[in-house]
Amino acid sequence: MKHSTLLASALLALTIQSPLANAGNNLEPAPQFTAKRLNGETFDLSSYKGDKPVLLKFWATWCSYCLEEMPHLDATYDKYRGKLEVLTINVGFNDSVRNVQTLFDEKGYKLPTVFDADGSLTSQYKVIGTPTQVLIDRDGMVRMRTHLTTDSLEAAIDAVTQGS
Image: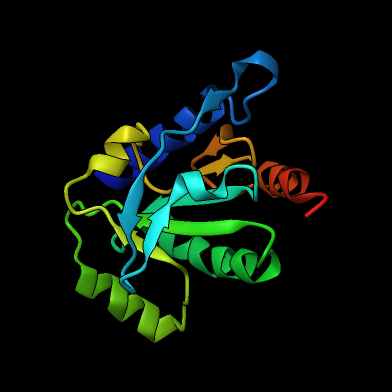
């Protein structure tokens, strides 16, 4: 079996074996952070608490699944503008700001992005593979973690944005 096939199988097994949604008393508070976006603006997760939910996407330009999901994420960003804050976090591992900017320029993406050069955010959120999406509700609690964009993620986004 090729290395890439083994990695894809491991990610699929991880996705199937780990619970995708946190329920009931299993909710955990999202680790708080402040970071500079590529456009120079500051992102402070705590400023969204009580206001609107946040979707974090950990990704890399060399990750084929990440690249496949980017158009969907860009559409989600447009669809929920004002109701959901979307932030992409490039994991920084074997990547560069230049690669991110080139991709965004080629594809026309306007997604707010942080480059995690030292891996601190990736570590803080215990990301073990890309892509990883983390959905945080208005109360600052992690509602869902998933490796792939699924109907379950769509339903969870719809649920946390209701009433916005």
